[in-house]
Each structure stands twice: as structure tokens, then as C-alpha cells.
Image 1: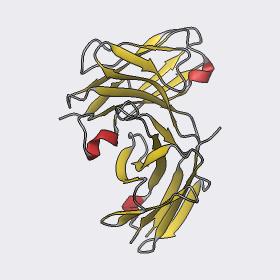
Image 2: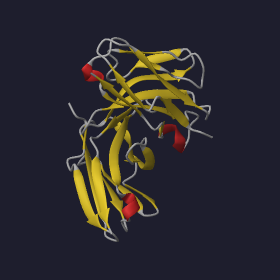
Image 3: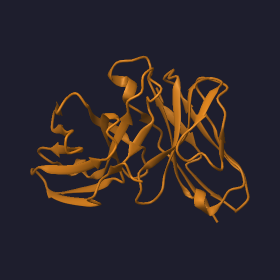
Length: 117
Length: 116
């Protein structure tokens, strides 16, 4: 039962254009969503996050949109740069009083983004 | 600060052998985690710890054991290795003191394990 899905295994984009990575989830108990970026032979690094009480969060070239009714979130990268080429993971956290859900994330399968010069 | 350090980076085991993956963090984080990532799949939580002496199972704990005797270290033990445990293992920690950092995992570089 995959509760977080990234249905596009890969995405190829030209430098300077917009990259849009998508993520769908099924569990309505998720209250916090994160995007991680992973380069080969390295661990995932945090990119941007959004709480379920918001519908948009922006950080420089990265914007995450959340559509709760559709259980869908997307990551927009504008403009895309060759250094953005990596695997992007969407992750979600369940709501839990007391903070015991911290760090217990459900991850999607990842999308390989390739940005061509 | 080194962050989260994992050793070894690579290891090949024979079926039935045992080994320990080491993880250490120098950020004074209370919460620590072990995830595994299989090819084409997302990361899955194996075990986690909310402080020294306290551990609990995640989504896929079978075949693994953990201990947490200090804040800094969180080793993962594989007993009787099986081919199904071939994976990349990531250790992570979190700043649980609150604020925006409370939900952000800091990962190590990973340990690639092959069981033949």
C-alpha cells in the first residue's frame, strides 16, 4: 500500500525552463510534506517543506504547492539549472500529538530530474 | 561539524553472516533513525530512537536490531543476513526541540550493503 506516490520516474528539462515534479498521497492524516534532493552516493538533503494548513511555500527558485482536496503536491523549480539534476523525493509526516511522529516519514519512489544545458 | 557519519560505505556479506552498521551524529540531536532504500523505491523506516536507551520499530524492522547507549551513536545490527537485506541504508537525525527543524531529517551519506 503505497501512501505517497511519484508517478513520473524521470523528467528531462532544458536549462532555464520550469521543472514541475508531482506527488500524490492517499492518507488524509498527513499534516506535513517535504521534498528532498539526492545526488548519487550521497544522502538525501532537505529542500523545502509545507504544512497542511498552507497551500504554497516559496524559497528562492523552489516553490511547493499543496492541493489538499486532490491530495496532490508539486515542486516547481524556476529557472532550472544543470546543478538541479538529481533524484527528488516527496515525503509526508502523519499528524501525532506529542511530537512522536517527528522524523517518521513516508517517502515516494523518487523522480530523476535531468536538466540539460 | 561532521553531521551524520555512517560506516562502512560499502560491504558485501554472505548469507547468514552478521554485521553492524555504525552511525554517529555530532549535532546533539535526540531523535535518530535508520531507513533503507531499495532500487526504484522510496526510503522505508527500519528503527528509530527518541533518546539514549529508547528505541522503537519502524515499518520494516524484521531482521534488524538497534541499541542507543549514547546520544551520539545509533548502530544497526543485521543478524543472519539475507539477500532481501541488500539495500542502501541511511541513518538520520532530527532536532526535536521544536520549530521548523523539528520535521527535517539530516541524513548520512549511506551504507551500501550487498548480501550474496
